[in-house]
Structures are given as C-alpha cells and as structure tokens.
Length: 307
Image 1 (cartoon, rainbow, N blue to C red):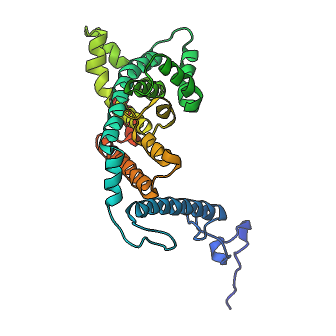
Image 2: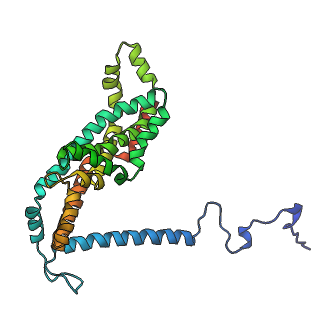
Image 3: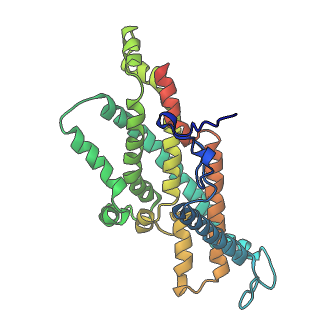
C-alpha cells in the first residue's frame, strides 16, 4: 500500500511562483514586451519632432529648386537657376568669405585670451574670484540683445559701425567667456603635480605652459573652438546691430534679403540662400569633427590625469 505525502506545506515553504503558473509573473531580469504609456509618449514626441524637422528641410530644398509652385504638392519643374541668381544678386562669395573671416578671427582671439584666463581661474585663488567668474557667465546666460544695443551704441560712437572690426569685437563679448567657462573645468581635472614636477626640473612658467600643458589642453581647445565657431556663424543679434553691406555674415544677409523691399524678393531666392547656409554649416562641422569629438572631452581628461 502506497501512501502519498503532501510536502507542499512542509515547514511552511511555499512552492516557487513560476511553478504555480501565475499570470504576469516574470523571471528576475526579464523585461516586459509591453512598453509603458510614458515610453510611448516620449517616442511619439521624438518621432513627431524629426518628422516636422525633416519636412521643413525638404520643403525648403524643394522650394529652392522649383520654378512654379502654387496649388500642387510638387513644383511643375525644377531648376538650379535660383541658386545662380542668389549667388550673383547677393554676392554670396563675399558674404561667405566675411562669415569665415569673422569666425576664424573670433576663434583665435578667444582662445588666446580665454585659455590663460581659464588657467588663472582654475589654479589661482584671489579676492573676488567668484564675482569675476559670475561676470564671465553673464554674456553667456543673458540674451545677446540686452547688451547688444549698448555695444552697438559704443561702436557707432567710436566710428566703427558697419565695419568688419565692429562685427569681430561684438562677437568676442560672448565668445571669450564661453571659452573660459569651457576650459576652466578642463584645466581643473589635469593633475597639478605634473606642473610641479616640471618646475622642480627647472622649467619656467612659459615652458610649463607650452611644453607640458599645451599638449594636454589641445583636445579642450579644439572642442571649445568648434563650439565658438558654430556660435559665431549663427550669431544674428549682435552681428545685425553693427554690420553693414560689406560686413554682413551669411545669417544676417539672409534676413536682409528676406525683408528687402518689404519682402518683395522671390521666395525661392531666400530658400536657396538658406540651403547654402545650412550646407556651409554642415561642411564646417564635418571638417571640424574630423579633428576632435566633443563627446570624448571628459574621457581624454580623465585618461591624462590617471597617467
């Protein structure tokens, strides 16, 4: 005679949950296939953003190539004549040259002034250091138009209005603090014992800065230069207030073309200039990112400090 023993409740031990076949139970680490409503909302918002962005870009490109476009989805015919007309009518070669000249000069001066200033803020303690740091932050945080009008007034009073010099000077106001704020934490993460060892070996401050620190600072300088480049090329407010016919950058030239003669210019001309501006920015970024990736900035600093 065989007796069955029920051990399910022995010693108060319950059987495993998955053995019960309970619905909705998952093994540890297993993820549910059904996403939460919040996840779907985020993905839907992201998808809508990219759809609208791509739609706007495509419509501008199509408009710049269309001959006539009224009540149809696409123009009746396509042509590159609008680009030729815009290039000749608005002197795009000169405008692009001015844009690149302003950007390069602003980058060089900002780096030459901003890197030593960032070094002082990172390595030295002096009275009113926090106050000076806050003053450097103001041009970066404040809207450019708030201090652009007084700057423009000063430039016109000095006789520099509508000149290339004025455009460069006003763009330096936010760019130099931007380099300082970017480079200060970068320098703070570099181990100061490297400099101490160099000084103990007989190197003066100039050699320490050029031979020791500069190779370590190159990734940060390149990253800051890329950010200043993008900011300067896209800066409208300050440039518009002090520029003139011979000193307009590309973004200001597009605005002047759009508002010239009460908006009487053909829409396709403005669209073609906008496409040229976008392509110029993309080429600049692609070339710049060949030399440095800003996302690797912190990783490189940490590696240098561990060494």
